[in-house]
Length: 113
Image (cartoon, rainbow, N blue to C red; front, side, top):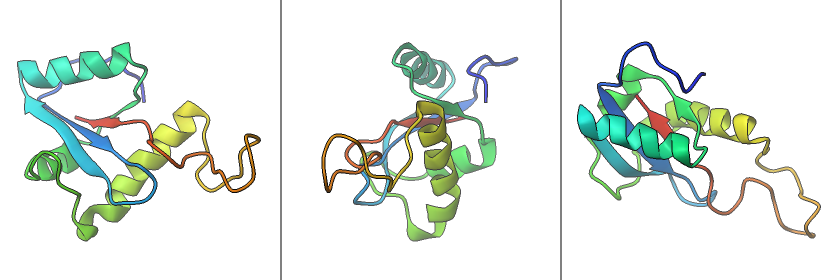
């Protein structure tokens, strides 16, 4: 999805996924804070994914907390979106060395709004 919007986001959520544990909420906000989260993401080349309903649900999670299992499938779509846009494929061996995997380690944060 495009990082350009017709209207500013009402809410934004940043997620971090390390490839091992469940994704965590690393930032969240509404109004001006949501716009700031999106600006920082754009400045750092972090993909933005628009899903207002999911963003509302994720906004209920405390900062630093893992997402609950019930949201794994929905958040997996967000993570897959970020991987595709960054040209990475989770679980595909990289050329950097045996045993290493692209998409392992810290994944790009994906913004929700």
